[in-house]
Image (cartoon, rainbow, N blue to C red; front, side, top):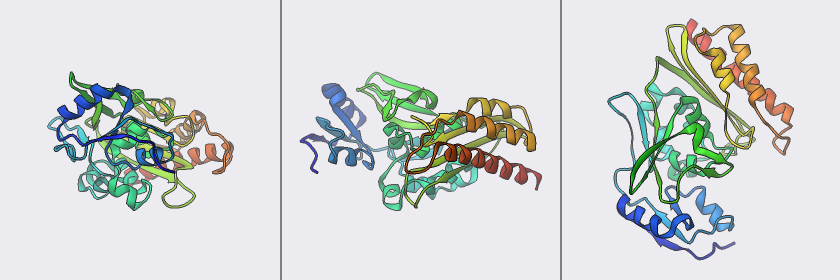
Amino acid sequence: MYPSRFHYEAPRSLAEAFSVLQAYGDEAKVLAGGQSLIPLIKLRFSAPAVIVDINNIPGLDYHEEDSDGSLNIGALCRHRTLERSPLLRSRYPTMAACAPLISDPMVRTRGTLVGSLCHADPQGDWASVMLALGGDIIAQSAKGERAIPASQFVVGPFQNALEPNEIAVRARVPASKGTRSGTYLKLERRVGDFATVGVAVALEASGSTINRAGIALTGVGPSNIQCTEAEQALAGKTLNASTVEQAARLAAQAAQPKTDVRGSAEYKRHIVHTFVMRALSNQQQARAA
């Protein structure tokens, strides 16, 4: 199937991009990696009047820490860059575990973390990671910037909180409240498939005490799910058999799975419980070593 006709713009600055968005409003779509947008256009699930390709805009391909300890990931930072990042491997274990599991090598070469977040697919892996880390998406327009918490960014399946005149210019992970640990576990039918179940776990601890816990789920609800009760059950505690089991049980209760070709609802809920148990037990054993 061929896409419907559209106008193509390739601005060389954010100011130019904002001007195009101002002119076309919600009839415009921003293209970064295009790994989600292009298939939608080819299948005519989306028919924008204009494509705004931001790949010629300098200064958006980066991931770096600020002086305050927060991590910023630019709108054109590719999955592949994050997969190979020494910074993520040394300081952001949940992100480092997730990056190699994004789709397949071709998609990782062109696709972007920020673009994935904007796509708001309920089976998108990065959204769960950002929820677990308590991250923000920074939106910019001609009027300035605003920070949108990851917990408020997705407003429905394939719908985000951006205004028509805004571009998501970066994602931000706040400074840690202690030593980071965590992982991302993903069950898929084959390599490169969407998640049957995905679980992001991010812990920040001082010694054996957990200062902050983040747990989020992929593929088991109409959007990515933040397991707030499970997180609260771990905050201020130490990891032991009791706290691990309680968190896993509460996370499984937070899941909203449906039976489909990937498995029954009961099976998916069981996998959530198993993955949270595994992730937290591994962290407990690492601390005890």
